[in-house]
Length: 389
Image (cartoon, rainbow, N blue to C red; front, side):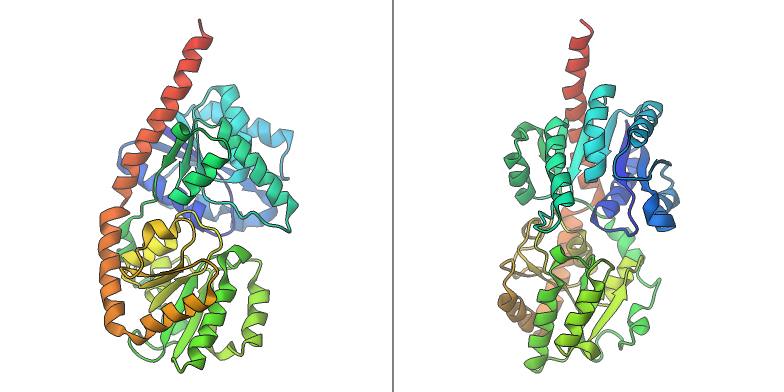
């Protein structure tokens, strides 16, 4: 099968971008032909080429359609020409902009379209993003298959009017053994001026874009609460984003300057996770967060708010703790329990590694997605046959 992954370029590799890398790898391992078509945002400069470079390192062929503005006739024409030239069996879109562009183009070109839903922000203060989300929901109704990563998103997409038969639950998989083999590329603790694991304070951290939906403020307030209760802990924030300066001011206001590190975006994600004693997730919205799966695979205990796909990944008390979304007091209490109990952390680490092996492998994901592609292709073909009569 010839598959085209379609995605908007970005300056960093977060959820959707990481999914493209993993999914392309899994499909190639199953013998499929995979091509990545990127809507390349020129306004982002050369940093927008990061995903393309990573795909090429994996041996995945790529091509670009240049985007000099949000939407233009030139962009639509370029995307149509690229899809005609590639002649895929199925198009798999991963970003709102490409979803919205691909929905009418794939209908025009009679190409099966699958849209993978990576999440909506529902911002109250950004009408442009709200408009894109509404358009994306229309695109989902036009697609041949909607791919969702969690049960929570399945219900949400069904609410947008997408027929249940076209919604497919496909939790992400990761290259578990490959991720483990990457540990040791970078000495993250030393770079952050932290002692080796098992020495000094416990290191609690978030691996997430510095943006409002990730809930970093909950983490910072819990960190302060732990220190006020006599816990020797420090916090590390991995990632970049628009809230960096705001969060730095928050750290200053909470009196945590000495105890919080802003580590930035670190491509060597395995070493970022391995520098932590506990991973924390405080998101307001989530699909199926890869950071939780990756942390489990590397034996890192987790404390997460029960948001979206977090509840599909974690069982409270098994690989970590789940607390109510937005409940900062519950977050602090769960962190206190884990920080005070080293044997509990060890049991959670072992359980997490076993669960990642059993439920979140790349072959398991690839097997599920092949069935989705087959359904999308069969849905499109009857129309073509009927059109020719």
